[in-house]
Length: 346
Ligand SMILES: Cc1ncc(COP(=O)(O)O)c(C=O)c1O
Image (cartoon, rainbow, N blue to C red; front, side, top):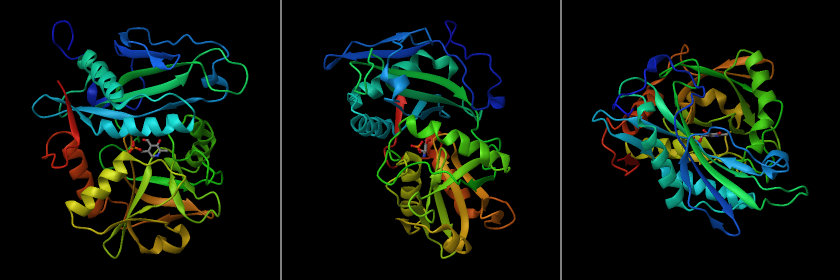
């Protein structure tokens, strides 16, 4: 809260997915094999060496997660331990030091707590986006790992990622550019994966789509993922499928949705390669899922020169509606958290 215990005077329900400066961010520096103390600071700028490997060689990675206010006023995080694990996996791949889970989560808790007045109130439809990041900051000219690293966590209140809030429909356009090589870094949350996607997103948006959809880069046959979200598909046979691929980000939202489909809706939920052109006729519903995208039903996909519609008349289908209600209900603390997924910021 503010010094006077009030929320910030923001028009919460009008927020888009843009950076809004909040008061505090967490910062810790690693050098000589150990993390320094770490502290909350006010400066949103980072002064780093001009030779820092984060800038030249993209030796950096990040995470994305959200905090929401529950009906009882508690601030809730969703499975932050999985974000910590994923950052550790990415850090190992990029020869960066580990941010231990306890340190990762504690810094997130401290940052959210310190910025409590910026956490959107219950019922506003907005949430607090949390961006933990790990960057190689030390002076370094040659291609080798940095000698200094900064772990930083900043937050920003956000509204919907796509311009179609709630369970609005989105569309995707298959990219002619690849996102990740089969044995590359696609399954890691490395910034290097995203710069190359900017042009693909632009091209997709020029076609009228919300985002690019990537097929596997070996054969351009199987669905990989969207620019910032995984894909889930309800087939006409009643099962839920999601692409199995070594090149996609292991989405925490997608893993949660697959569990909910199986355990709450009694659906068969399978991770397997999905061949777009051959199988699209069997799709009853499709959706993009992720922290930012939440669960956004996909009404149509552009490929091979035309739009291909999915499901009935551009409306969210019943499976995605139920999955959305379950996921968001748990994340907001409205439904019982049977899986132990929530962490309250006390
Ligand atoms: C490329 C990509 N795929 C998938 C996701 C979804 O992952 P998560 O559900 O863990 O947010 C993200 C991040 O939101 C992403 O950047």
